[in-house]
Image 1: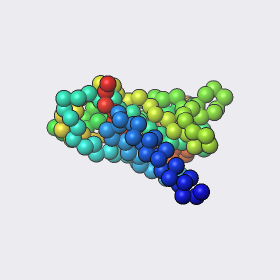
Image 2 (image 1 turned 60 degrees about the vertical axis):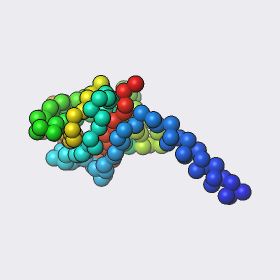
Image 3 (image 1 turned 180 degrees about the vertical axis):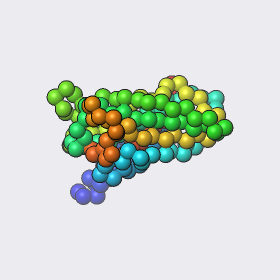
Length: 159
């Protein structure tokens, strides 16, 4: 009976992961128990098909220690020629009552946040992500951002 259950779960896992045909790149990096304001998460992207277009997402795993309604990120995309484009992004992370948005059954939630759509790559790129959260009325950023445990980048094929 145990062997039958094990085989069943392996088959379900294979089906679950094989259904993700759009995924081209999907990687997470841990920030520990708190994301320091000077910590930059870097993703070295593989060389992608330059004839195709892609959608980019920032994935976050967070828990109930995250105490803010929104999240500010500074995201830099470094092209092969050294040109870098920098975006400042804001994402809503919680409902007005304080409950975290995202998917998950426990206190850990996973959020898939749109970053860029319909992107065409030519060569090898790097993506750098830094948190830029500030408390209301304060100029300095939050030094240690608690509640964010992992930061990810996902690239999907455009239909």
